Length: 150
Image (cartoon, rainbow, N blue to C red; front, side, top):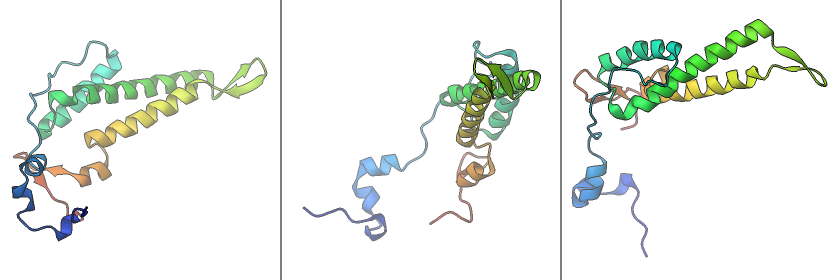
């Protein structure tokens, strides 16, 4: 059985010969616009962050209903980080435990919230590296970076 040719060796009309491949390579699916109201389960701080980041993404024309939970999780992780930081600032980095001094348990929560925040920031295009990967023009078309492979 012959192996398929790598993409750079295929004929230029390869995509058109296989409609399933051509459909996969097409435009992003169209989703309805995201509801501007924050999810009810968010705390007040997360709702404030929602309003800020919703506006940023909506102004760029990239926010859809499919992104709602991603944005909500990002905003919740910011609120969680700030709450953990507030508790650590009040209690200190260490606490007296049964066996002596140990690190504050909220440090683990703080680190987890920061990891979640970074991951979702990348997914939403809030980091320079993620913005360089895919840029969208004002009319919704993808703009290639000068560093993209052709």
